[in-house]
Length: 251
Image 1 (tube, rainbow, N blue to C red):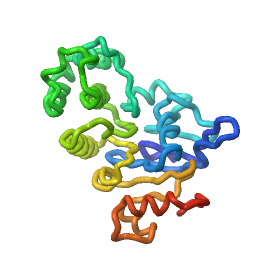
Image 2: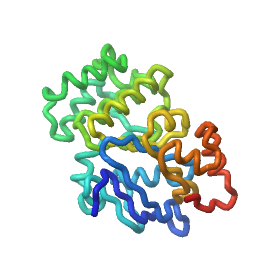
Image 3: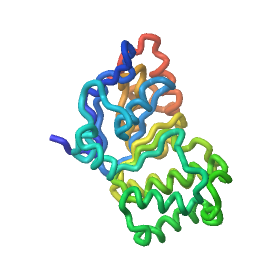
C-alpha cells in the first residue's frame, strides 16, 4: 500500500555497465523535510532526476502522491516543484515575466498567486529587481528567483538539488526558515546538500547514499547514534560512514 508522498522501492539505474543507483528503497511523508546526502558521484542527482521525471529507472518503482513517475509523469510534474543544481532561466525575460511564464505553464491564474509571490520576492529582497532582465541578476538572485518560481503552482512536493549554492548567509537563513514553514503547511521537501549543518538543522529525517546504495537512514540523531558517535557533529559521522573503502551498507 502506498502511503508516503514519495515511495521509492528497489530503485536501480544503470548506464551500460555502470550502476549509478543500486536497490534504493526509501519513503517520505507529507509535511516532512527529507535530506538525501552523499559524496560526489554517490547517486543523488541521478535519483533526483528520476523523481523529477527527467530520467527513467532501469529497475524498481517510484511513486509520488501514489502516482507512478513513469506512467503518470504529467500528473506527477503538476504536483511537484523542482530546482536543479544548475537551473535554466530565459535571461532575456524580466523576473516578473519569468514568474508569469511559470504560472502559465502550470495553468495557474496569476492574480490568485500574485500577492503571495510578491511577499516572497520582498522577503528575499528581489522586489526592486522584478522588472529587470534576469541577465542582470547575480547568481544568488537567480537562485532566489528559481526558488520563488517553484512555489507558484503550490506544489505538494519540492525537490531541490543543492539549495544553498550561491546564496549569502542571510539568504541561506531565509531559505531554511521557508523550508520549515512550507513543511508546516503539509508540503514535503526533498533536498540534497553538501552542507551538513543545513541538513542537521532543517531535516526531519535523512538518508545517506554511497556508491549508489543507501547506507544509513533516520533522524539526524539516529544516524549519529548508528555511526557510533552520537555526540559528534553530523559532518564527522557522514565522513566516517562514507570513507569506508569497501562501501558496505550500514543498516
